[in-house]
Length: 285
Ligand SMILES: [Zn+2]
Image (cartoon, helix red, strand yellow):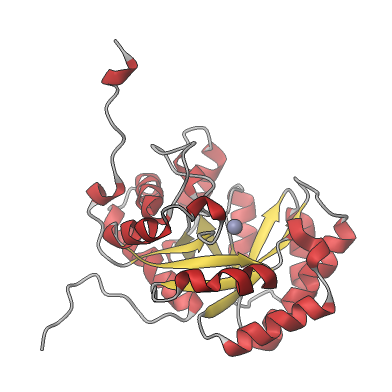
């Protein structure tokens, strides 16, 4: 048997999903998409991903790159200083973000913000200061925060509860935890966004968590260009591949993939305040 006989990976268009899916978290302004961004955006639409949230990692990235999505109304925006860039934090940077949010209705959430003790790129007190300042900004703006948390669950929780976020609108991005952590997040009334690794066979704790998370609180995301779902694991991720994440969730929950797709898309529109999507063809007058 030669490797050439391996069956080709299925393309996302072949999943035939209705045009009401939402990728809640993507990094399409990164230079890994410079060569084919228009094609990537077109493939998302052709694969049922009707909207995608592009996450700008700080006010400079936002100012520099937002033009990349001119004429692409299906892309909405998030903006936040990532804990890995916590040294970008200054009162001036937060002021620049405040002005951006005030001027641009495409900006729907403050994120991704939080704590990252895995890479630990910056001192933890610096990360926490950056996180707290942006939670306060989100509160002032009346927009929800989107949380990045890696190997820092207890501290992230402590900061969020201290900032009064229990029971308020909040999205836990790229959830990779277990049933107990999911229970804590849900107990505070928050939403959870599920990424591609839910499709990896060995992530059994995550599978059990996803089985327990009610669909009403669930969103889907690629976090592209990272974390492509099976069967595209290890390749560049992009929004069109979101359907494979929906497929994995559907298997875990033993529900039709269209139901996962439609429900998570609706949840994302509600969460970010986007106009509702229909999975029916448009009515013609
Ligand atoms: Zn991200």
